[in-house]
Length: 446
Ligand code: UDP
Image (tube, rainbow, N blue to C red; front, side, top):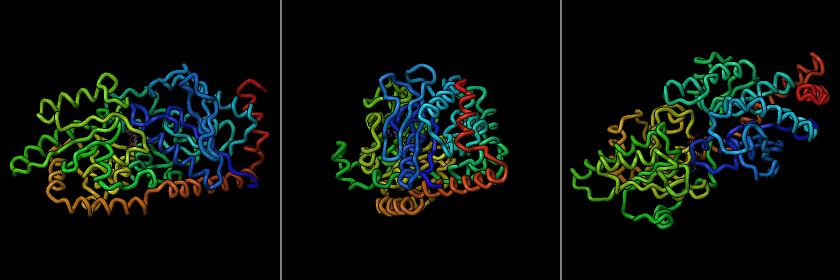
């Protein structure tokens, strides 16, 4: 191709510009941000389309060299929960088409994120004959299985996921577990599913000396610090960590270990921890009070990515024990900061943590097991250092965003080459003129 390849990244609720840690802002925002930037460094032009949820935000933000964020009108111009957005997806699709026509842009490939943008990508791909790649970030069937009546996803979700899986050209699975979900639970064609694990920015997440990190965030030097960073919601099960803390405390007392044990909880809806805005903080505080460890739990509130290395590095160990986890960026972030991680043996966590080398895998909802592994770190400081170093090394070798971008680019190139061959064989579908005509007809501008 004699011009840069232009990619439309569709991500209806997760904008790279949103501050993370809130109820609906997490790993997907990071993925869209990092993959788009790293693709741009490889010469692609990327427009990230997300829903306009703030009347004062500009329509287009020049986000990084080669990357723009485009806010499309779809539904009320105010923050909404992601589970409320489904009815506005036809509007999102039409706003995309109007933008494309107005700017006279030709997109060579659509990259859908999450099931709703997947629907938009599938629609556009089918109607405009643009190749499409989809990454779900989380699957509806798994969510239903684990969350049951608290799952607020729209009823159509699983049906729509099935349609998207049938329609798009390629599917990205973030880990072997997700590959099996797609192929075994949803019947995806294995030939069209490519596993590309997500990653961590090793320049942003890097080890800081523990002493310096603790000084920076105002923690005492001699404490044993357990760190949880992530959304403060029931599914991530921070209550499991509070329960484990109580057990650990009693075991430490029984062997007359007087070192103070501290649990840091970073995340929530607001920068100041607020149980009104983040009800789970209130739940955790009551539980900790009941178990006699409230004074040891420090609620930090949400923090920006560029300060998180101090929180991870202040810890002796990071913990994440969700009920389930499609991929889980936070274990990688802790590892990149040279800290060992104890994580639930679920989803992507089973492949990022190497059990007994870079941390430990424990069953979810099992505070006893978690406390057992924490106790080992409490008693064996050398183990913490050794596993922390192994963790950083693993991340550098396997889990960086340039590696993800390289694999994604190779997927794009294969797909585009196949499409070019097909276009030569079967005719002009997919040429710019055809795409324009079809888009004009769809928006009634023809
Ligand atoms: N995060 C953040 N600030 C916070 C809490 C969390 O930036 O106060 C980020 C965290 O660093 C990670 C993301 O939110 O990059 C959470 O991603 P993960 O895949 O672990 O879980 P998800 O939230 O997508 O379920």
